[in-house]
Image (spheres, rainbow, N blue to C red):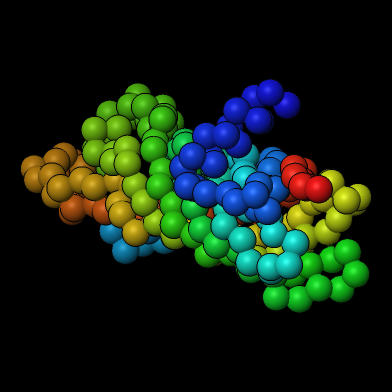
Amino acid sequence: MKTISTICSILLLILGLNYTAQSQSYNFGLRLGPSIGFQQWNGFDQDPLFAYHGAAFIESFTEDSPSSLYAQLGYFTRGSSFRSFSFNGFSLSQGFQFNNISLTVGAKNIFRESGSLKLFYTVGIRGDYTVSTNLSDYDRFASPFYPNDEFVNKINYGLSIGGGIQYQLSEFIGGSVEVSINPDVSKQFQQPQIDNILNPYTNQQTSIGAREIRNLSIDISLSIRFLRKVEYY
């Protein structure tokens, strides 16, 4: 709990919430779940990458308002995969992973309530920093047709749009199920055209066109929420 509390303090500073005497209450918690990553390479769609994510979040709380501000900081694996099939039914799957620390700030609005259930949507802006990739796993092929770390952009930014169901287990503990779509605006990978490359399959000289890769991920999150409620008498 001490670690979560520290992360929440950092998120409060990032979010810049200036609480008044009646608005020092807030929700905080953890969000975990699977992710599905998509990428286009030179206009061709790659196969989806199935990965995971985890994040800590904090959210402003006012009892008489359906709207709030939020911030979240987490670890997200983005990318894509390539699957090939042979005539005997054997498949080979290759995953291209970009492991990112992601910070999102945005707004949330509850638009419908039914008992302890609340429907909501969120809109936010996002910044990612790539801490590692698995692209070095393909260095053994010594092929320029595979992406490599030299052309990875470590800092990226994009949007986050989501929605889901929030529920209360008690006055101070709740949860939610949320689906979010996270398109990058910037390029995760940017490689210029490379000429005079020997194609290992044809033994002919060829060129590799400029390659620009943006991430798009869908995150499915299960959250547990805690309310820090401050009351004045």
